[in-house]
Image (cartoon, rainbow, N blue to C red):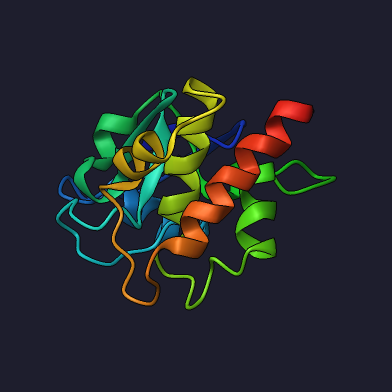
Length: 156
């Protein structure tokens, strides 16, 4: 099967896609977009979170064929050619990236939260990130990064 999808604003095509392939596999292995990580393959960890038509989704749970004709934005697509997104900047500045495996999903989830709730409370931040698991941190630097990113976006 052939899958036509717009990834980070660019029309892309994947050929010979097996019916059971996930969007995550197509993004990483067929389209060379390694930002979203393959961890649990069950939608439990959040490391593969992408925007699918503007809504966060676990790419490991989306069949590639379901993405036909749709818009996907990965963690790579949040940055412009000139600069990182404020969420990405804040994660780097706050040291919230450690091993980096969970980072793409956390960044997309935090980005989505700040787009919906420009000045999120700590409870809202924790709720928004609840579907993302990190094995390296105690989450405090991640929470600090989200707070900082919200503050940065507020001044822009």
